Image (cartoon, rainbow, N blue to C red; front, side):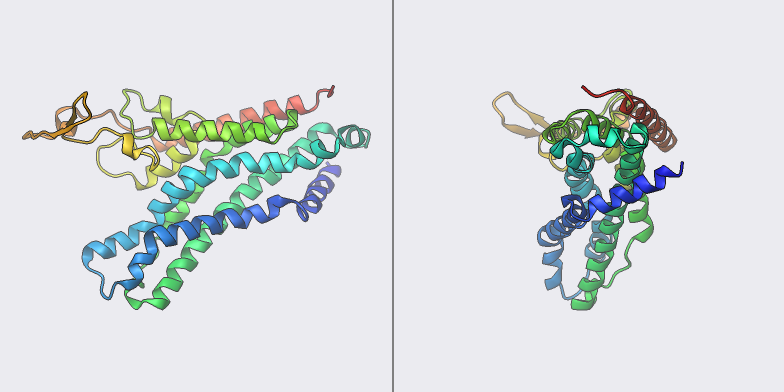
Length: 304
């Protein structure tokens, strides 16, 4: 056990010159830049907030955190963190040298896993801090935008996102440990992003079968904080244009015909209840720890 703190310190030294250190604040900065340019910048010209605009301004931080960060940048970050943590050993082929040292192979893997979960949490904290800072600056530039920041809701979203990312982060750690190419985790990340875009927003008889897919789980866990109404899940912003529109019939020619009925579809055919939060949390922690234990055991096997 005395060697494990030293392994953690050694990984911290490697991070000093690693691109991963810059990634922890570059990706959140990219998120804030996109969120401000696309959504917040137009509010700077507003002289007075109507009740509708005030509600919109208050709901933007949590919704954009789920839509932009959780929908696009978080899957990329989860794939990059393990790949960059294992990059020095794979790039310079130092595995034989490391395994000749009086340190456990499994201890080395566990140290990298601890740093992976820590860096994921740090990145989410930076996202929350930048959102708060952005809203404070906007309120200083335009006093009409000095609305209350939804701190509790944003913290819940980021916390659920960290818990929901445990299984897929364990999978990426396992892959990055055994495969030297950093492109492989990125490919899995792109596949997971496409899965999230295609599956979210669909009404299923058993929605847990979709929400408990490891690549969909971070988005599903964070999205349930802002969910409202009878819907099972908010559609991913990338897949929203392909979702079925309510009260609209699309002909084979592509033409749309708007229909009308006295009773909405959600009342005539109410969807099944969404996946309960306790199941999302229990599965995330249980599957994440189980996959991490399997990867930890596999890390002790001899390398070719």
